[in-house]
Image (cartoon, rainbow, N blue to C red; front, side, top):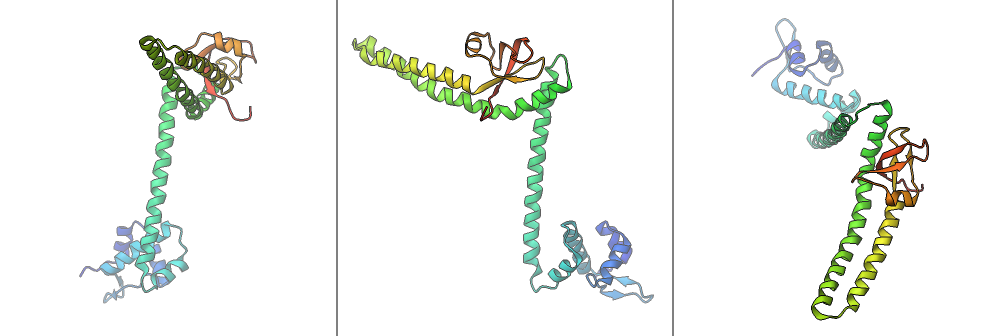
Length: 241
């Protein structure tokens, strides 16, 4: 059976010799034997015990608590629970770091698209990244209303052309117009814009927003704060504003 000296035990567990000696002085790790010269010698079981002690110390468990735990009749069940908790904590940390990495990658891509970079640009990008989920919800609501109305209008038109019965189509057209009015009003209430010059988040007038040239993510507007006229980035309006 293998026997390890204090120095070998310390090296195998990545700790100092003084730490091994300290655990011995606290009766946490008593050597299995002594050499003829009086040197401490440890067995394979002692090495396993030391690794458990080191793990529990990494969990910030006090020495007294470790001593009590190892003195239990079935310490394995408690250690198994601690291992599971540590695994869950590490998985949560990995997930959090992956989320931060994704945001960093998004920020890097956004910065490459900015011609004139300023410190304020980072704030704008961060706001937009946090805001995209809410903006997608707004657009999803509009699609959820618009698509059924479009299907109903088209279906009633086909029915009218094939049967000559026009009143369902007229009802469908009325519903489509009403739905369109509601969607425009809903969209206006739930979006704001970021000015690329002063970086202010502002809410434009209805007529200006309705008639303005736009892309899927921007609209050409006049900032209500600095008066700049140009394409402004669309974001979801915060609740209560």
